[in-house]
Image 1 (spheres, rainbow, N blue to C red):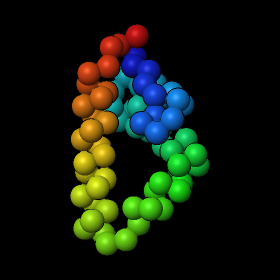
Image 2: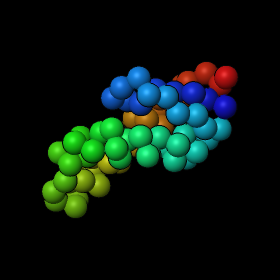
Image 3: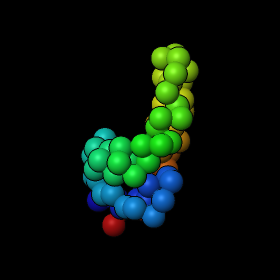
Image 4: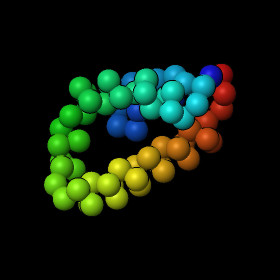
Length: 68
C-alpha cells in the first residue's frame, strides 16, 4: 500500500495501485481544488493534453513512492 500526498496540499490518499490511489484522491481533489480544475477548462484538446501530463507526472510520483 502506498500513501501519498496530493500534489497541491498535504492531504494524503492510499492505494495499492496508481488507479486505486487516484480513485481515493478524486473526492478530495474535486472539492478542495475545484478552483484549479476550473482554471483548466476550455478547449477539449488542451484539457486532454494537460490531463495527460498531470496523470503522467503523478504516475511517476506513485511509481517512485515507497510502499508502506
